[in-house]
Image 1 (cartoon, rainbow, N blue to C red):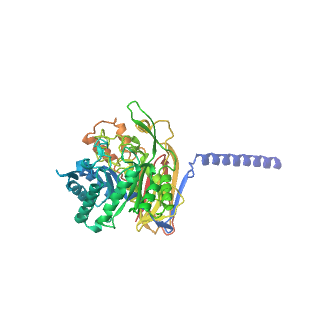
Image 2: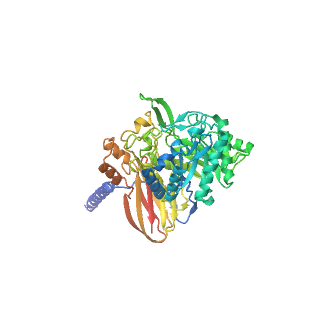
Image 3: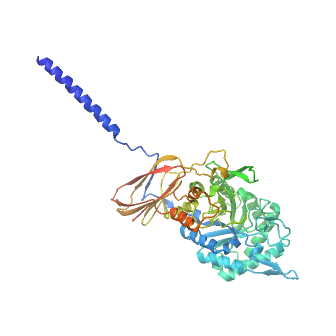
Length: 531
């Protein structure tokens, strides 16, 4: 009897324990678990990699000189200087007839008029920036032919008289020296022409360009040997070796190399005759070219020449909606990250849609080059540069390749992104003209150690689909041909770059701060922690 009772008790006890265990497993299964982050960005405040390279904000581009006389152009330039930190500005058309620089009297003697140039350069300097002077195009009275480019008819032919060309350059540089002082002008750069390796920009061929280059460079140096002159300002990284060889063999002044690159390929034409363009998905597009040019310079007779990319962007067309899309922000950051340490400057083309190579601006968002549209609305590309400008002076060591982690005296900044180029058979002009929701890309953990103890304010800024994404908002408005004043205000307020999150963070000595962030394709985040 006793044995039967014990056996029954043990059997019921085992069943009870099994049921309890089963219930515990069920309850545990219902507890939500945090999945491991797909990506970790870790840095230590005390582990400094070195001074942060600010080459990305050295210079920015614009359309042409005459546009710079406009009040709204100057308004936008002041904004990108203040918020994005750009120091130099480069543009075409300085010597264009609409600037009134050159004419001749009845005897054929040169007559110079620098009033419009003075007004423009005064405005640039008053904003706090400096000119990266591009000499071009040819004044009609001095031109050897009538070939032109663009709606505003930039003359692309060589001078009919190289002595008169040299005299004009010398007179202009002397005028600047007298007006602004030698110490100011020696901080400028002088670049000869624009993309002479393309016959749509220069009709004189390579030999003709080198003749123009030498005459121009010697004219600049005749005013002061301290002034910096360079080129060849070529499209697609052309003529780098040849330019250095020419300067070496002819002892022509050459203080820097400049060239251009864009991240698209053209293929076919649509029914209107417009070339269809496709974003190059190669991770080394643009940045690989920068490294290649640097290698050419280092293996040349002038291995220490500075390298300035005086134009670059996702596309060489001012009618390509990739410029308006949110994808432009991570595109810019990924290419700059890959070029870091290999160029003295990378001049984004351009800061504003006040740009008339193809005629008057046709609509508020038309695929223009600018970081700001015609109404001054800020595109995602603007915020890429604004975020970059907020990074501190010292870079911290980090193994993550798609980020910068920096510090300053008051805290730390983390800028990170995802760049996922579209894999598609559709051209940019088709793909980016519609709403393109972003796919999830997992989570990112930011882990920061070694911060001094104290109370910090954490600001989280973001750019991506429907976040500081003015173009998508414009599409959802129905892409109106003309924006009302109320619509402009609505778009500006929704895309004003304010933090998406603000948090007070108390950090104890030795504490590591960790935060997780959801990431979508082509998102950009800036996290700032400031005491």
